[in-house]
Length: 173
Image 1: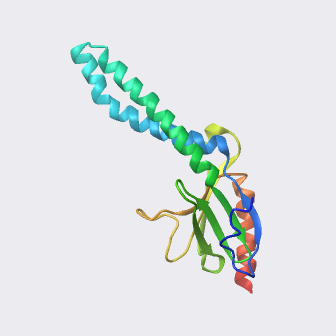
Image 2: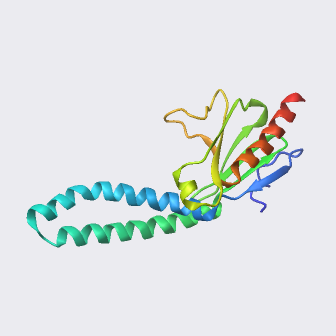
Image 3: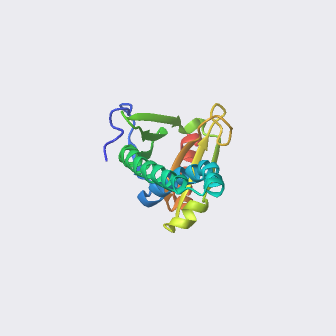
């Protein structure tokens, strides 16, 4: 995986790279799409009760199937471009849909971090979780600001300890 070599400084090197758990990555996006669609289908369900017409059942089912297929295809493209890493200087995220985008956060400014294991992580059962990093400029839990996070990482508590130890070493220098 040489996903970050284009953006590394001359004296910077990758310590470790991580790919999100595939099953968790796909499941979270597909379940989100289905839940949104089901919520939107409630008015159509009322139409079935009032009009007793099968069309109010068939159309939502077709829409749900089409949206799940589209969500799967879009998720496949974004999964292939998703990669996390930490270097001797910063934490990095590679993602994208059309192109490849990068986010970085310098290790010496990280002031907050968080590990979260949610319902989908437990449902997948692959010992996955999310690690969030924050600084004064980009906190971990602020509405409207996308957190700097390594999502769907296997063994999140040990990965967190490993990265946190490295952050502490960098800050001591």
